[in-house]
Length: 213
Image (cartoon, rainbow, N blue to C red):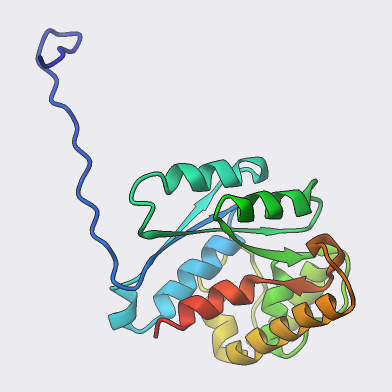
């Protein structure tokens, strides 16, 4: 029997709209930053060819660092077989950085981490990934190079960020540099992401998305 609301009228049970499966995948990206990663990945999606963009979903959700895994699991509870879950976050001052990465992996969530910060990944577009240990210094130095390359001030909330670095940088080379840095860290016996600096795995997510073309 249908339930009634406070006015005595019958309530119509809400039905979840049928999920249309994107042909090329549904990327669910959960991050702990206010703007940078969202601007970057939404820009990446918009830069894809239209025929690819219309068949591929990239949804970016922002939350607290400690909630990333739970939020990812919550949002993939429905239609889990179609959604590709990732968390994207930085070493910065995050406590239990390695534990978060290990827990995510154990629950089937892929991780695009950066050490010390996301800017070290974008730095690679300009041909290098310098040995910077501190996230503040990394952001400052990246901003300096970004301005020299694009002629504009760097802003973490710039919705045109991706397009700018893609136009003046080299994404294929960035992926290659990031891959080499990761392999170098592994060869040097660094077993934990927190020990790998500068390093990132963002290239794995970007390369996978770009591979849809």
